[in-house]
Image 1 (cartoon, rainbow, N blue to C red):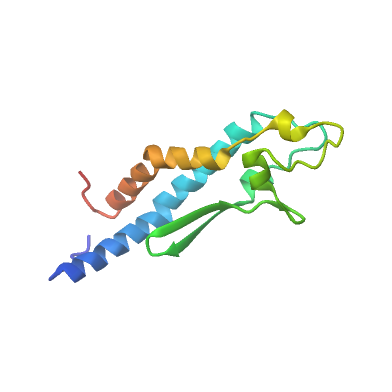
Image 2 (cartoon, rainbow, N blue to C red):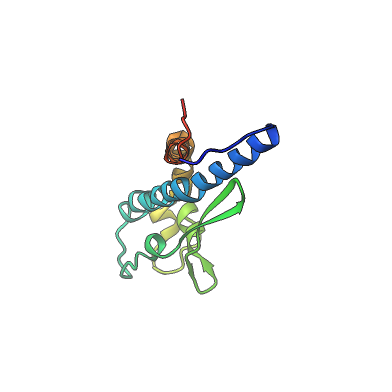
Length: 143
């Protein structure tokens, strides 16, 4: 374990930023991605079986992305598109289905809020658990 000398509050702030960023880019990012994939499974795939198309699983397997906006801000997003249509918002809010022309799919399928459910789970302890794990993995004692 490396010894870090902290002489003033500025040094302490810099060390805390580094360990927090490390935890955000590893453990928190992994937890956020896995949570969204799990919510896509439970809120999207398990609640509706397609009739007119074969499911590609691109929403879960290819479209979940994480970016660090700044040192302490992580952005979790789903980038699935079909041409010019942004698929996550159609699924999330249940508005804008264009296939199944003889049926009202907006009403039949309805919203499948995987994004909101991901946010809830992370807010209700998933984020904190991953952050604590990330800090502990770096040798920070968290009580």
